[in-house]
Structures are given as C-alpha cells and as structure tokens.
Amino acid sequence: MASIGVIGAGSWGTALALLLYHNGHEVTLWSIMEEEVELLSTKRENPDKLPGVKLPEEMEITSDLQKAVCGKQALVLAVPSPYIRSTAHSMKEYVTEGQIIVNVSKGIEEATLMRLSQVIEEELPRAEVAVMSGPSHAEEVGRGIPTTIVVGAKSRKTAEYLQGIFMNEVFRVYTSPDVCGIELGAALKNVVALAAGIADGLGYGDNTKAALITRGIAEIGRLGTAMGGKVETFGGLSGIGDLIVTCASMHSRNRRAGILIGKGYPYEEAMKEVKMVVEGVYSAKAAMGLAEKYGVQLPIIEQVNEVLFHGKKADEAVKELMLRDKKIENSDIPWEV
Image 1 (cartoon, rainbow, N blue to C red):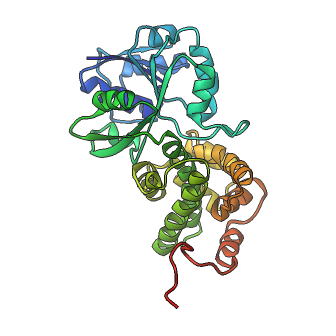
Image 2: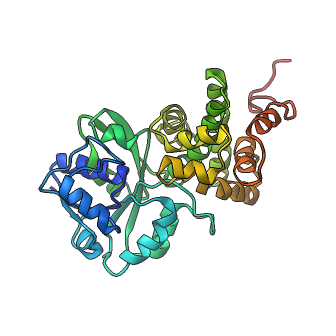
C-alpha cells in the first residue's frame, strides 16, 4: 500500500483518487476551494462534475496542501493546465527530494511554450516528474469502465512504480520513456477535438470527423517529432488513442465546446456553457507559437485559432482547409514510375 496525494478534485482527479483507493492505497484528495471540499466531504460525490460516483468515507478530503503533500510516496497533479505553475509553486515548501509527481493534466503553458512537466520541474526541481495520458474520460474511469493508458517517465523504475500503483483489471497501464511525445499528444489532441466539435456544430458528418482525426494526428506527429517526441508515441494511446475518444465522445469538454462554437457561440460563451476548463482553447495559441518556433505547418490548428481568436466564420475555415494547395499524402513513400 502506498500513501498518495491527489492534487485537484475535479472530475479527473476525483476519478483517479477513487481508482487508487480501490487499489488499496491510502488516498488524500485536495482542492483549493473550501466549498468543493465541503461538498465532497458531506455528499461524498460531486453531482456537477462526476454524478453518481461515490467516494468512500475513509478517503480524506482536504484544502490543506501541506497535509496532501507531506509524507506521500506519490502525488497525482490533476489541476487544470492554466493552474499547474501556481499550484506547483505552492507545493514547493512541502515536496521532498525524489518525491514522485505524476502529472495528469494536459496542455502547454502559453506564456513560455513549455510542456507541463517542464513547468513542474522548474518549480519543483527536487521532484521526480512523470506524466500519464490516454483514452480515459473521468466519467467512465470513475464507473470502472475498462480503458488503457500510458505512463511516461525519464526513469524506467519510476514508470514501473506508477504502473504498479495504478494498474488493475479495468485500468491497464503501459510504460514509455517518451515523456515529450506523450505530453504533446495529450495537449494538441484537445485543439483537434475543438475542430471536430466545430464540424459537428456545422452539421457535418462521419467522413468529416474521420478526415479531421487522420489529418489531425499527422499535424500532432509533425510538430511532436520536430520537438523530440517519437513517431511511435503518436500512433499509440496518448496520440491516436486519446485523439479518437476526445473527438468522438460527448464526455469531451473540448468537443462539446467546439459544437457550440460551430453553432456560432464565441469561445468564451461556449466555455461558460460547458462549465469546465476547456484545455484546447488554452493550448491553441501555444501550439501556433510552437509551430512558428519549429517551422512546422499546422493547418487545422491554425484555422481553429482563426475561429477562436480572430472572428473567422467556422464554415469559411473549413472551406480554406479544403482548398489548400494540392499535396501528396506521404512524401516518404516513393513512386514506382
């Protein structure tokens, strides 16, 4: 049994806290919001974010960050990506040398273009930082519906330790040394999922969705490999796996926001309607910053930015994508004649 602190009591943090508890670990769930702590402590459920998923009475829920961090063998960082740096900074005085932190949030820091593990390492240099991603909506993980994810770490020992903590009969865990690739797949798929939702909001069909997923993973892989990620990772759980589920599922806040945007809502109103942090909106600008930095073309993500931030009509963005210059699908495959 391990003692684990889950930092962030949103839907994903709560679902993982429950999974870890059922795996026999001692779990402390932390939220910065006193009212959320009170709600979870009294109702043992979050009726807005994770309805029907009950938390055991034995699980400690607290707003005391010191209590959630100190003495824990592993920490799960599950706050939304815009709050990763500030939360990590607040943890600094409590984190000890070699303490394992697995980040399960998805995004890129807009101001610095840093991956989230890099942000955490900058704020918490004494910690051993890992990441976890894959097709894993909290609504299903919380109900024990089977899925498979991947843990990435610089050290095989750390990755295998986390694999042992999380893995059970409904939550299969693979390991990988490609932290960069896992994080980029996780962050950029949210932007493509916005595009998929926009297409749904415009009334387009399955052909359109399949095309967006296929060309979307091509964009993710193009930027990801330029930044040092491995091409195999983008064909795996944190790449195409997570992209498929995020583009197709109504559990996806990015897809739901995209649907509203496709129907004409400004992104601010769409985010209010979804009532959760829509990570793709925060990652979209950062993705274009990275594309410029690494000299990579991201036409789908570029058009998402145009719709979100520059007032472009969604149907015009689609038309521009369709009428781009003629291309070969894969330039690495030679012609016979």
